Image 1 (cartoon, rainbow, N blue to C red):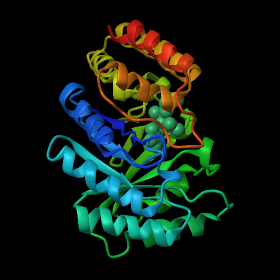
Image 2 (image 1 turned 180 degrees about the vertical axis):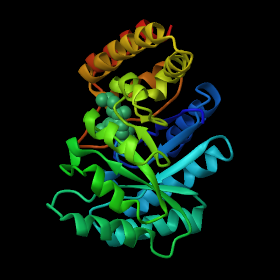
Image 3 (image 1 turned 120 degrees about the vertical axis):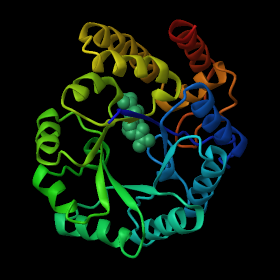
Image 4 (image 1 turned 60 degrees about the vertical axis):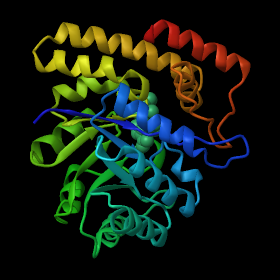
Length: 291
Ligand code: NAY
């Protein structure tokens, strides 16, 4: 099966923190029309969803779905520390809007037991005709699942795979070997090539919003057995990613959209508003990697 690339969709905001729908829609369009992206991951970390109200998250699901139409695959990230809200978001995404696939971050902040985490996923899926990707992001959630624990979550047949944002390559190898039929989408863009070697099904990431073409070329080189070319492209992508991180990751991706002619709004506080220095930095990054 061809490997898939998903951009983690950003959510555009105005200076007063309200949603900027035109900006979000424009980023959906750019991903479909310019990047020819396989899919969008909506309302994840990159989407700033954990700083948004339930009403705002629902609205995001609705406008992204409307704008994308049949243009690419869509995954709605419904996870929340408040399980009632996660269930409400899942029901809305699936039954009101029409998403076929959802994803949910592991419940975070409190040190939940594995049984509690399993109950969280089973509760979100209870009564819903959908499929779900576990969103595993130990660096931000503090929740690390073992291969055995992923296996227990997979006992729910609606759980089809993992968005694996983790640099633990031994775990990735163990999970890949144990569950060859489950989907694994890798989520650390700067380590994609190493994950491709271990047999991931694709990637979901923030930096593909601008860097999709180079990443598709890398995947194609890897699949053609041209590891030298794939590595050369990963090196360039990582120079780009490091520059973006140094300039402030999410605000800079929005600034890069601006450079590409897309009015992507700004990030929501407490994320940074763009400063003149950040704008100048983004202009340099755009000129260096995308001209
Ligand atoms: C999301 O929206 O949930 C993601 O984008 C997950 C993947 C990204 N992780 C985070 C925490 O942003 O693309 C990565 C990441 O931004 C990139 O690898 C740069 O470190």
